[in-house]
Length: 94
Image (cartoon, rainbow, N blue to C red; front, side, top):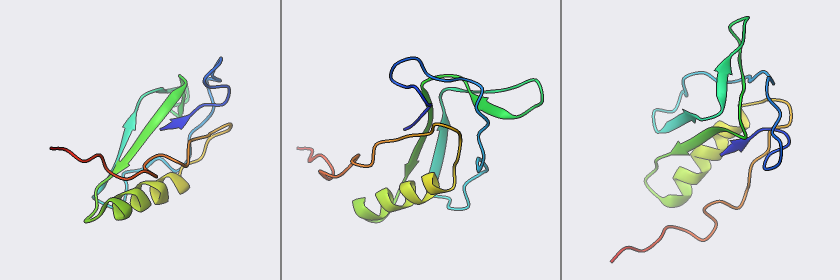
C-alpha cells in the first residue's frame, strides 16, 4: 500500500502520480484507492492510502519481489510505504 504524504494523519492531496501505467508484468496488479483525475487530466493523490500493489509468483518470495519491483517505478511527492510487509511469510491454512 502506497500512502500519501501526511498519512496516517492528515494526508496531502493533489500530488501528481508518475509511473502509473499498465504493469509490464502480467502477474502484477495496481489497485487505485485514493486517486483522482485533476482538472488537467493528471492522476493525483486524493486520500491517505493511494495505491495497492500486489503480485503473484511461483513462490511467496517471487511474488513479494515482483510487487516491490513495481513499486520502484511509481513516484509521487511524499510517497511512503512499509517495507516489512510479508516478512513473516505466508499464513498456513489448515
